[in-house]
Length: 544
Ligand code: PEP
Ligand code: MG
Image (cartoon, rainbow, N blue to C red; front, side):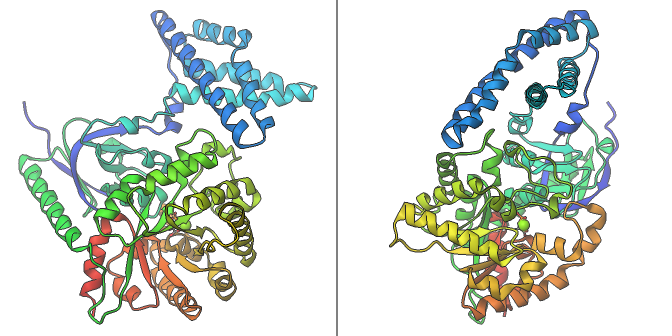
């Protein structure tokens, strides 16, 4: 058989590295939801069985949700789930669904959507307020069933075949977090920005990734080679390509391990200036890699993934267990845990928020936590209990007003006194400097902060008015570097004046071309993806 012709597709580098594997075309939930199709008479039973199974799973989920809400929130909230469970058992609804599949000869997803839409429509126009309120429950129930039918809960991404390169239109942070780095060798996205949260996560996990390559132009069978150092994808590679890239990959790995061995020691410039190197983590794999690579602590623990992993809001115990599991092995090294930063491109379904009109400019980070204090309180209580085991510090995201730090300080002190006693040491509290507003009120923030951590990813976005997700504004985003370097100088000086630590935890901290300038400012630490630590330490040691 004649072998297919080799060709190279050019894209944008998102996360460096090399991968060779088979493509796995992944359709995100939105496009999968559009998959409606007609069925044959002999397929009716199979579709009805799918509906039945989805109902059983939904019932179990609702029971769990009911119990969790009862023990965590106000028990009266659990009635919602009880009511939905009752609706799910309603014989009328079941009959309607069965008839829809039989009569219309459509797949379960389409039948379900038609039936639920009709029910919601009928209930919404009722004159009775309580009947109208049921419409929302029915709608929510329909969404739950649809999600189960589509297999959204147990993402296929968690069960990828070994040696796969994921090819997809776009990847959400919740998708990326579900990836198993042992199986996912690389990522190719059609639409994606190197500054998005998914991109940041891919780099943290050390998965090579390239954006801006059209799915339709990629061969679906056979091997592909992803050269994410150059931003290239080789389709139908020759034998020589496979050999050459395998050699490159191996020598890259050897070099990486050589540097990792040297990375156990602290990093100083030749003139003796010490720059601490911390790790950004989200999962226990990241922590393990960070420890191996010689991290001196955790500079940014993003806890959003813990919330993404729970179907309902995690309780204090859930948080304690999940956080301790991610931090296992870190010992008494300092850990900066960031309070939940939801909003922007990061959403968690269990929060059940209405979609925001302007997610990046709306109730994100601390704004949401102060508006929904129960969310803040459960985190603070869990953190206080975890202090017995870990050396924790807390970082407050998306600060724009001085009173936000004051309010968090008050709440923190209350929980400290209640849980650890009056004589316990205060919990170090840091302001995340990631908005121009925060840069303009540094002296006021410093009064209520024990440290600063600069989130360059958002600071660029908000300074340049260029969305991190917006590929078209990418040029503006990239040209923000100079302005951010000026701001870094200002922020680190303000911190030095108050004798508080000032680190950078945004992606700029890992940009080796900027290390010299950063190490020359009053920055005390850089926090980067675990994989970058060895290279960064070597770079610091090479500086005058
Ligand atoms: C940042 O904004 O630079 C940052 C580190 O936070 P995130 O990327 O999670 O928004
Ligand atoms: Mg940020």
